[in-house]
Image (cartoon, rainbow, N blue to C red; front, top):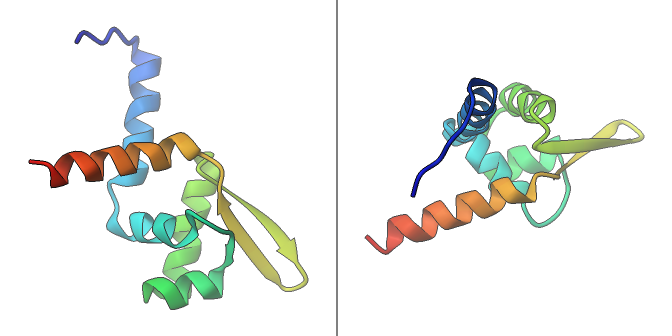
Length: 98
């Protein structure tokens, strides 16, 4: 298989993989892959600290991976980049078959 990408496309691809390169972000994606959750719910599910979760969510939001909505004092996050979730699933499946 041959992949022909220009420098802008390579940069965009590298940015997507950078999002996946941090285990805490993968934990967060796992916590919200099937339903939106508040930051507190994400912390409860992952065991990560609120400040750390908020930092990672902001990076993922800026990258277009997640979106948020405010409801009163709570902010809820959901995955909007379903292709990224599919990529994670394919990579996981491939690693288990080796």
